[in-house]
Amino acid sequence: MKCAEMIETEIETDPVVAVDNRQVVRLPMGLLGFEQFKEYVLLSNLDEAPFRWLRVQDNSALAFVVIDPFLVLPDYSPDIPKPDVEFLKLKAPSDAMLLGIVTIHEAGRATMNLKGPVVINRHTLVGRQVIIANANNYSVTHPLPAAESSD
Amino acid sequence: MLILSRKVGETIVIDGHIHVTVMRVDGEVVKLGIAAPMEVPVHRKEVYEEIQRSNQQALTKQNAPLPKMPKLAAAKKTAAVKI
Image (cartoon, rainbow over all chains, first blue to last red; front, side, top):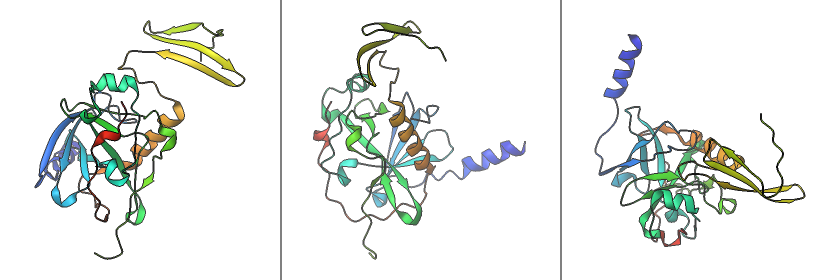
């Protein structure tokens, strides 16, 4: 009984507030290591840009911070393997929305994963974490630029 | 673990729909051809585990504090994506 109460409390405090844009995204294979989570909400808040949240759609408030990898690395040129292109039904590169998963380390240092971006078909909103064919050229811990010491 | 000997050009079939063929053996390097339905992910284990660990580290709670970033130039579209 205690357990159920705690879960309920968590749901109530789930901080879904002031979201500027939300899209329901389906990752039928989940993310690597999180194959059990298939439904996500991609949340964008203007004041949090360029970061967005890829939140697990189960009231747990579990989420990943994501970013458009091209913002950080304009020369990024991920090569998406053919089975992934077919699975996602991508007809043209512009059909693909890419999200780099961000890891926040100690002292606010942050990195993003460029070997395994989340690739989402913009039209179907179905996605998959893709291990790019040229993964050897990129890091799972590509550093994000840090802000100047004071704003 | 099941251990099978195969020659170049020979195949093993897994679950009736996954075919693994030995394409070439070159010293210590074995080239495998894998034919699997597209919903069956096939990955090199090292990269798979690296990304899995990275995902586990990245998992957070929504509204965790975000790092500060300098202003970034607008991204070009995904034209650089090769499909």
